[in-house]
Length: 193
Image (cartoon, one colour):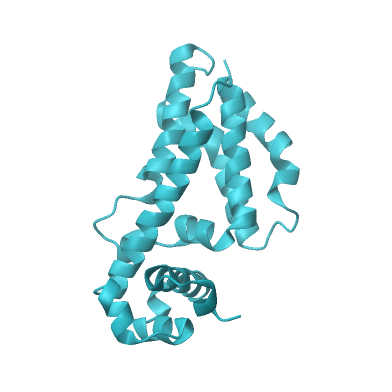
């Protein structure tokens, strides 16, 4: 089935095609003409929605960060304990990696500042700020040790991010959720009060 048949919305088709190409070949190794050819649409259709390849990358980045932010917000805004919400973030990140590897790869692997120089580093994007806010909440409640916020955030959420990178690079073969509990327990103990 062609990509076009799965995507009746031309804008979505362009973004999905760009995501696949940027993830597989890298941003700098793809052109608007590559996107056009792979999506099987006219160059005019692309330029109708996006004035440049950079604008496609920016829209894709914004879309993915927004989706990830929404998913993390949903997880952390429930009534569970802080520990349970942090575990749920690990679980969400691992599930997203297994279900949407291209999206996670674009968020974590792409060197966004090279082609989106006005964007802050990805670690400053809203999903990562939400995780950092969760750590601050834990320190404020006395559930987590009082540490430098960046250090504590890296100790708690750095391990799943690294596991995701290893999985996306093919160095971990088994699905990440299989390692969720031991990894979460090790990370949680590193910051728990």
